[in-house]
Length: 600
Image (cartoon, rainbow, N blue to C red; front, side, top):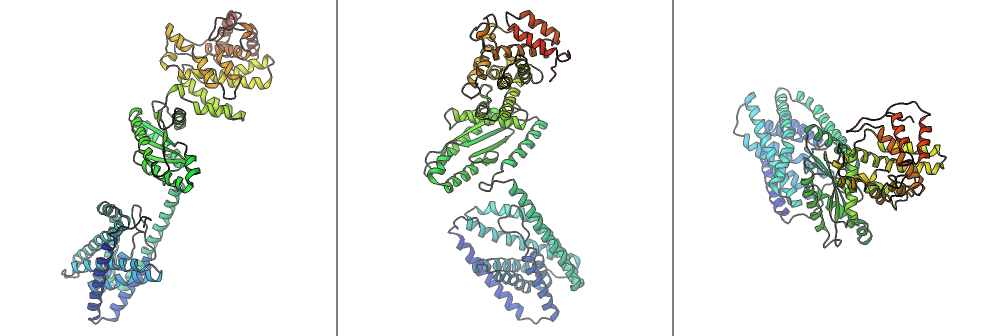
């Protein structure tokens, strides 16, 4: 049972089946008792009865079946009908489950219905094969096959009828699902019934040899099913039935590998219920749990869904590119919005979307970009979908960067941002990290305090953050920029400043803002001259220029250390602070002259 309110049609199913089953049992008992039987026959029926009762104690669970499982008692039931006729078979088939379930104190209605189903199935099979005479191999095969099919059809139909009646689920789809789930095991059990009948005809004692293997099969299947169920539980969120956080990462990795091999798109949609804490605070956690379960039900309609924790969900949209995924995500947001009225008031969700291979190549990157997009949807009024865009790429990471008091955590976050910037620019390797490391070395050479040195290293990692908002065709243009393109590119320090200000990393934001100011006052954005430029910005300018000249670019060869230093010294006093250029020369004099690389 599923816990739903039973349908009003349930008694219309149970009552006639129980009446018909009782009539079949009475008719079989009268016919059986009216005929004398040998001790061997009674002993054989007793043995089959015991076999059925033992098998009923260990039903074999099957996936996709709306009952507890199938019972190997079917093997003994078919054999009893074929070997001893329909009347004896009905008596055994009805008595075995009835006795077992009564001993287990099952509800009377359930005992009556289950016993009636078995009795009607056995009677149908027995009457079907009654006209077939002979004891040859062919006749035995036909009898067992017809009896097994008749009993399977009757069992599946009548058990499905009561499940449908108790859950209000449509009968025909449920019957189809149950038949598909049981046809293979019932076919195998039909084969076992044939073996039992053939062995019994040769020697009843020899047929008992089947009892051990059948019991072993049942126990093994139960053990395997429990192990598989435990594995599923480890990957399933217990409240919603969706895949959990661990399952999500495993599946996303597999889907990305498959998408890469097949050359198809894949989109990740992260969904978060807006202000869900208010639902729990106002209506209580049981109501909140019901809302989460309903959200999960609706998410299953669109793709493989997961609950990542709390009120956050993920939907993996295989084969969908950005445009199709946006339409799907929009439909999700609209559909989930109808959950609120009548339950918890207005309920809305926000969603963030990122796609492979358009936005990201790895699962970590895809998750990060979708998370950033979700954050932007929240920040821009909620109840909406936001698709990954470069200019808002890493707002959540920036938020965590400013909030963290852990220096190592800040550097890890900065490294993630730096990789995103470098991936869009034409530098090879980790340009931002190299600038940060070199700026820290120059600052140390100048005698800057250690805390400022570390902040400068952080600023070096983030100095080009504003380039996330610059079109990629400008960043990667191999030739000279037009005047309009140059104006767009020169906005990146201001954009980086706006992204960093207020995040608790002062004076990093100021250094990033001014790291393209020139010593002669002809730089940007504020045309500050000389020592009006913050020292950290002057250091960044030199470190950035040096690494740019010694890095391989798409449109020119890299310079050696000596060539780059010569250029810096030529421009010292106009572009660059002469003291900082001298400090760089002194610092580089401590390491071998290795073209294109810095020693650490």
